[in-house]
Amino acid sequence: QVQLVESGGGLVQAGGSLRISCTASGRTFSSYVMGWFRQAPGKDREVVATISGSGYSTKYTDSVKGRFTISRDNARNTVYLQMNSLKPEDTAVYYCAAGNYWKNYLTRADFGSWGQGTQVTVSS
Image (tube, rainbow, N blue to C red):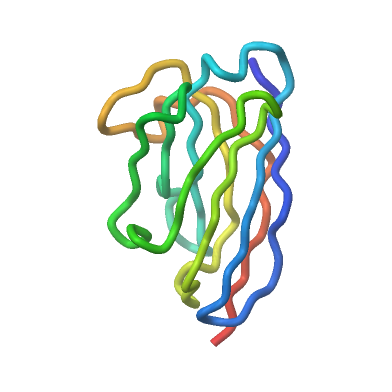
């Protein structure tokens, strides 16, 4: 399994921007599908965005389309989530995850390695 460490969370006002990062251990980062998930208090963990190993393919949940961008730098073993026009409902713990296979509809069950999470809080 790959080890994942998130960073970059924090407190931001509504309408602001934040970029969170996730750095992976190991030498085969480019072979992993990567995803960002989030979990708000009292809610299930939901997928936010996913990206294929090459970075060519991406998917977003409807609520973040046009506001969030997932990207990766395979030379740095890092995946990013750029979050713009943040809303209070984006407040959650954000987790990155690594999976083995790309497909059009990825769920939590498709990811076997998880980071510890980073808190993102959007104030109104």
